[in-house]
Length: 206
Image 1 (cartoon, rainbow, N blue to C red):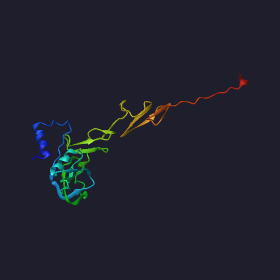
Image 2 (cartoon, rainbow, N blue to C red):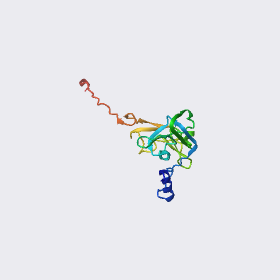
Image 3 (tube, rainbow, N blue to C red):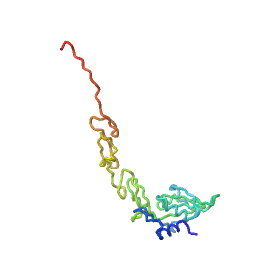
Image 4 (cartoon, rainbow, N blue to C red):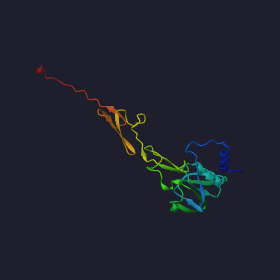
């Protein structure tokens, strides 16, 4: 019986599954020399799933965009399933976190994200685009490697400041200041109303 991974490959070849949008197809290559018995990578588990076999554990990693290695428990639970842990890092650069663990198999994939390609706290996802990776940028940054500052002030529709405030773009952020005659934190500005002043005239001066 064909495994789910094999079925997906066959469906792709037959054209049953439509082509992925640009940058959404993933290629992840698990290496034989990145496989270690009785070992488990710790501190990088992002998801734990139950699977029927080792191939399904690999397939689960393909389907989780941040996964680049797996910890597979060879011992089945009472329902006949194996525990499969998905990691967002490989053992490369984390050798001290590859612990001895009886009953587990660790397997890592080629990861283009080992070199810290994304800037400004961007999230690197391996196996995407022609470069072999893509960067998911925080809201304040953009471009392929999250190195370009987003100008929050240039678009009136997305300008976060009050309409009676001045927006100043800064590197990785912005600031809002209420215009003269208005008071507030820059996000909410209210018109400054002067208190009524009552004048009394000395009758002797009339």
